[in-house]
Amino acid sequence: MYNGYIRKATLFAVLFVSGLMAGNARAVVIDFDGLPFLSARQTISIGTSYEEDGFRITAGSLAYFTSASDDVIASRPALFGNLPNTEITLRQINGNPFTLHSMDLAELDHLAKPTVTFTGLRSDHSIVTQSFDLDGSFPLLSLTGRAETFSFSAGFTDLLSVSWFQGPAGPSFNRTLYSHQFDNIVVTASQTLQNVPVSGGIGLFVLGFAVLTGFMRQPGRI
Image 1 (tube, rainbow, N blue to C red):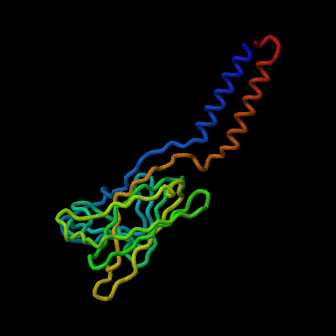
Image 2: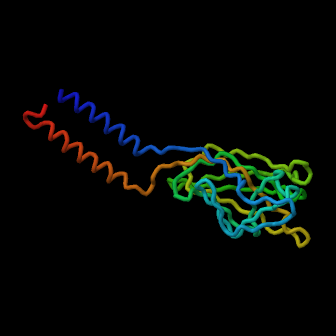
Image 3: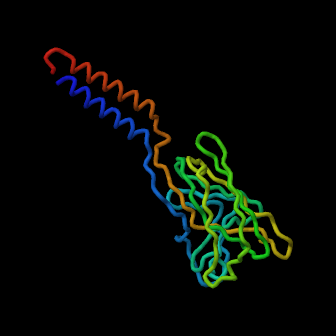
């Protein structure tokens, strides 16, 4: 009977530690649909950060168009870095790792086909990069707006952050020539508690388990 208790307690310990070490995942689509979207043509600045579904996007300046005819997807907002060469960064607010699956991108002018390069910092401090060439199909050429969906490689997992840059300033007659917008960022967010001292928790559990088994070994406690 004593051995049966030990087997059950050991199984419980394994399940407990496995559950403590494993993080739950949830799919998220960051689509900016909570931003006000008006019929009149306006460029709305939202400052240097935006938060949605547990994620934060930061840049020197972020903005979006409020007129569907100016946006990459009709009747929906899409963000862009509102300064030339500004760095745009995506991360979880709680600092936990995540996987980046895909993102919609569209140029702000059909005269250019900008290349957007993404750099991911993984939790093991390794770096992963991937570049996408936009096709030069300006949203105004489509009645419904146009954006391309780009899928990221398998390396864009276990990420602490992903950064990319808005294009450089164009000539004086067209400052947004090399700029792009982004929308529909698909990620999987880890919910592992990074700030919990897991090793200490396991140590306390092992100590308690040892005390329990010692108590069970006392004469008359079978």
